[in-house]
Length: 578
Ligand code: ARG
Image (cartoon, rainbow, N blue to C red; front, side):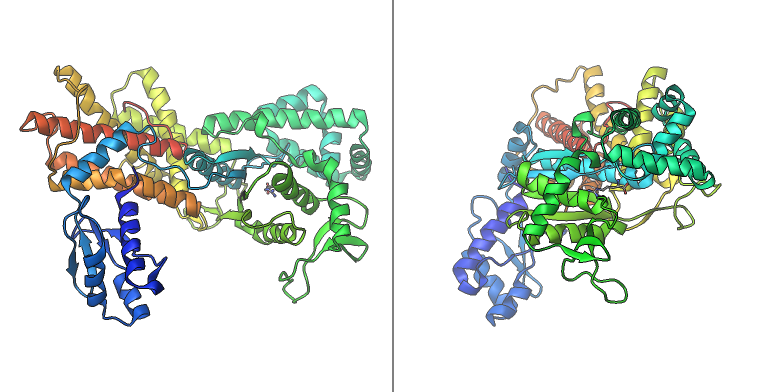
């Protein structure tokens, strides 16, 4: 069962096409409305195209549209809006189909694609910061949504595991001692490890010299150096995997496709660019100048394929990566979930892939950018001492704050309180991130994100448990809940809730198309709000008739299922009790 607004859009689009050839493919603009179930708002804009007065056009549309099987005769309002009210029998049928569907009415994507999602991508032996938090959370929600509508998703964690810093990191590893270094890295003391290496490099010319020679040995494949490098990578990965586990992010060792993976492909990638005539020498470096990218002074901006010292860098790796994803992994859609500051770099990579013929329509690649996390003062989010905030410290604090709230507000057993605090704390951080339009910056605000009121994670988790608790009460009172189903008539609050439930399909697809998880958040918040209104005005267990109770239990159960499924698509746990 598709979202009724989708069905209405199709029917109205059909009417438009049959009415006037110029209106073929036009969007009738179907929206939910307070006046009726749905309002069709397109007549005004389309009237101009056909030269008809809007109300006349609306009348012609109404005369032609075929809705007899699903809705009451449409009404024209105002300057040419068309109000549509569904028949209760249709509503009941749609709800029953949704309940019988494991996907809760979400239709599979029309074309299933192989989608590569590049996300998280922290750097080895370096602390994960809030930017990696955003990439991990947003990327993971997108992966879940894409998979849910049937795409084949290949997760790629483009770890920063190669490059010049590894000379100094390996030398530092040797001065600290392997065992101690492994210990620091696996427990997540990455910040200290990196900073000490950096300090030593800056202060000690001898060390800096060794570090430089170490880079050469690493690139030459010296076995001892590679072994030490691998130790750094493995210990850091162990730590990253632990963070993903805690965050509920579906990234494991199998999804790791770090920069080093592309080493064997770099020479070939460069040779191909050379053959295609895309390489230009500039100050001793081999570059690609994709048209349309310039420096502030208006000079063409290069991607550096090979540096003047003969080395390959970040640009080359990303070129090899996009080629591999399109050509070898067979992706038709490549998504980079990376902070906004890398916009130009990624656009240049994508443009070069086009020039090289690796990226050909219908295949596409896009940068799914996100803004910064700000502190309450609207400046970059930092510790009091001015340092960048460690991701794990943030999660610990979230769970600790949630623990206090859960202890104050609920009467859970100590064991349950531990699990629920973890779910609420982590869920609050994730939801606060996902519910903001990703391209904008947002201010990190503990009190707001942990509030049980408003568009927050805890509110939705709580709403879910509240619905579930109805079934606990029913069991306690010996009320049979096994045989539930929609009534043939709906009170206004029931109707609003029903229409929200049926909008899940549209919300998931809107999220998929825009790659904007906040669309799904807004939807879930509206669903929870509709449930609250319903619950206030429609007694469930104390309903007047059996039929009404069966129907309200049915709506409640379906609401809980959609909430839990929606939260799961965001990567947020939905505890059964709170
Ligand atoms: N490791 C990089 C960073 O921390 C992000 C990599 C993003 N992905 C990519 N294909 N360039 O900034």
